[in-house]
Image 1 (cartoon, rainbow, N blue to C red):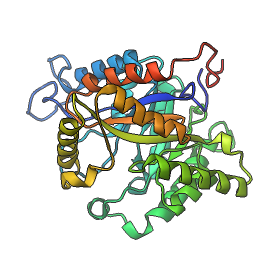
Image 2: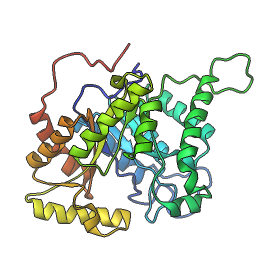
Image 3: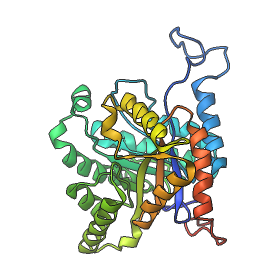
Length: 332
């Protein structure tokens, strides 16, 4: 069974699943009455196929984004990853990232433990605070206290998992999950200090390679100050990518797609989007690896996710052929 560091060899490439409803599910638009006579199709089938095909295309990890309240349809990430777990066998599965301050930590602890069990130890719980004040208002959570709530939530998660196996407690979290890695998002000073102190991995986004290298150095310094081995903290990054025959066309298409997703002007994403032919995008991803990122999580800024990810993964594998050695992240 895979334990703690499930992402495999350095220079691995992950994919954010487009967890959106494609069509109405079984039973059509009428209220769910507990059962239907239709087979499950549409969104469920599409997500299973996409997860399986992405794994075969070279994705070492599959990730799901999180928004509790959003201006577009978006599926809940832990439930979506359970569907992906059933369709895959080797890829790690993670939240990128779950906004823990919007949720009850004890409930998340149970959900995470269950997903770890169902996936055979492939789950990574990515956590963050988010940045949308309106979402906090809709959830009835205090936006100004989101950092403190995340700290308290991390402690609560670990307390809940620690109850497993304690026969002195009638009410405990069973079965005991194999260790669930906690990855923390963010590149602010507070976020980096938190990751250095509490995380098994660090996974920022909207950060350039040069800034990533500098901030990762700060992470290493803070980890040393906390008397932690910096090598015990996996370094990852989220990169938004849109492939195309030309940089100009791909950049226009990708920024338009991201503008629709985030409800922001396209120019807000121009400096963050990696765009162009596969080889050029692979070179841009290699810059993150040179800056210290062991795992790059790709968000495809286009509708047809696999049409972009497949050629990108192939181009990246050409630049970084897989070493012929045992996976150090797998234990028996």
